[in-house]
Amino acid sequence: MGALAARGITHAIVIHLENASVWDRHDFPNQTIIEIRPVDFMNKLNIPFIGDFSAMLDFSPEQISLLKKRGYQDAKYYLEPILQTLLTVRNQRDAQELLTRSTQRLVDDELL
Image (tube, rainbow, N blue to C red; front, side, top):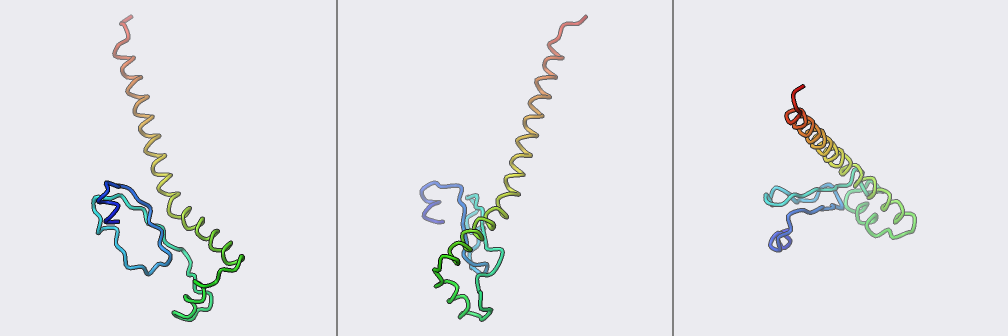
């Protein structure tokens, strides 16, 4: 992130491949960072380290398909609430603009 920040990048989406990654977005206070982390573990064998290693080296078509689906679901899980918030803010701004225009029309209206 430091290299991106040095180039003036202010927004980034960071995709973690595991939940235990030691990375803190608060180390970059001037950047807006959205983190996407796996909701489920990749370790299929339930054996620490060996299971993780095995899962990382599984390039079978089934595993690739599963990882794509999980990546999509993880991104959706983290991005949908952000999108809903942005839509709510936009709707509030639209409503405020409509109210302002309506009020201005009333103020500008001639008396009967």
